[in-house]
Amino acid sequence: MALGSASPRMLRRPLKLRIMEHPENISSPHRGSCLNTPSMSNSSETSSIFKEAWEALKHSLVYFQHHPVGTIAALDHSEEALNYNQVFVRDFIPSALAFLIKGEPEIVKNFLLQTLQLQSRAKMIDRFVLGAGVMPASFKVLHDPAEKVDTINADFGDTAIGRVAPVDSGFWWIILLRAYTKSTGDSSLADLPDCQRAMHLILNLCLSDGFDTFPTLLCADGCCMIDRRMGIYGYPIEIQALFFMALRCALVLLKHDDEGKDFMERITKRLHALSYHLRSYFWLDFSQLNDIYRYKTEEYSHTAVNKFNVMPDSLPDWVFDFMPQCGGYFIGNVSPARMDFRWFSLGNCIAIISSLATPDQSAAIMDLLEARWTELIGEMPLKVCYPAIESHEWQIVTGCDPKNTRWSYHNGGSWPVLLWLLTAACIKTGRPQIAKHAIELAESRLLKDNWPEYYDGKLGRYIGKHAHRFQTWSIAGYLVAKMMLDDPSLVGMVMLEEDKQMIWPPLNRSISCTI
Ligand code: GLC
Figure 1 (cartoon, rainbow, N blue to C red):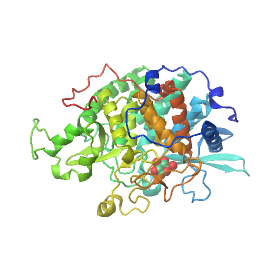
Figure 2: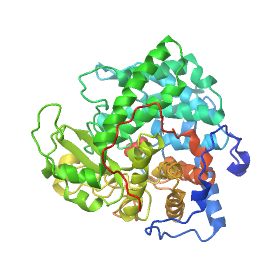
Figure 3: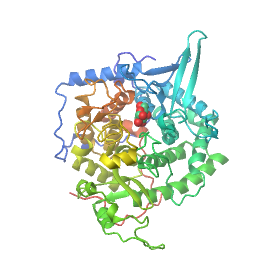
Figure 4: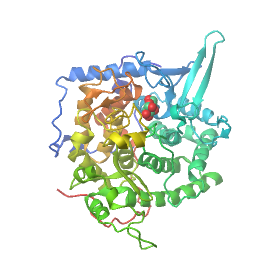
């Protein structure tokens, strides 16, 4: 791979992307007052961070039979490697986007083809055979110098800590295939029978009939980026948003043959139901919060307003202070008598990027981010979730997990990788200034701190207790954010416009404010 020292801008190939720029917004002064962030005084300092990041990303490449097939999760020799010496599907996404932007799509193609081969392996946990469509959470390349052979060990949750199922991997795989196709303008990869089959298998898994009463996808705890017990079992927003986005991507990638058409029909039906459900029941803003606060309970029949029989007493105290007059977000989880009011960054950013959120909802999420800058961004973007759970609740919810103590790791820790998602969401909503300030914050620390996996504390001020350094997706997330801000048209690779064909639910309450 010729990643040398030439600047990525010079190497970038012209991308066949739909231009989606907001030049008027890029130069407009920011309207929030919360953004007094340290800015990099020196642009040469910024460009040296950028160069160092590319160098580090280059070093993270993993080769299989002399071809790059992914990037290692972390190149930190000071911490115990555990499975951080593997290629994680979700971790590879920002790396893949960086390589696509740089005009190096081969590695992404290799990764997509390699992982679909892993998908076709027989997968067992003890005596239980896993679904055919499951994509691995991660894989490790083993080099045997004596025999001169490389082999791959994949983890489908069967060796993962806690045996967590990687529900997000298949969705990310489809999303990446669409990004590859959009960025290269080459649909021949997606059209390959193997790629079509891989998509069919993933879709079969998540569209199959069951006992569901909701269109959302029922999941076990820890099945996504938050891959440990954190009380996100049920219908976590991260998975629902990725599910929505992957379905929309599949719709454009599927071939119009008999099997493809059948899937397209099933996808369209599910998308209608899913968007209705998420936009109506997961959405929380000031007025919705007030409605829940006054909910009646024990309502029976179709006319019930409080459909999930949520007890107003289950509303946590913090949410009343957290909710600004102006703004809103998709809450963490909704199921019978249970609403998890926590904010989750990944799900909300994906909701914006995929147009799961209506334009008003997207604007409201950005309003919330501005209004709650200290809580959600603080000194290091971006909190994985907010707020942290503490004390007895932490004991019950996490099972006393010492990695997930309050304001650390998955429990309110700050993850630089989320910067690229935030930036894409900011550009889509025409608020690039928010991303600019967030990137400046990250730039003031990331390189100096050797690219930590996450930061701890209410403001994200401290390097995470058990954070690995040289965490590849922290590096790639920064690079992608920076390049997207520099050239907003790049967001087209991951962004999906609102589909006007779909009948969206009328929202009967004000979801955002006009200032
Ligand atoms: C942690 C994260 C997970 C990530 C993995 C490798 O387990 O929670 O999302 O994929 O590290 O970086």
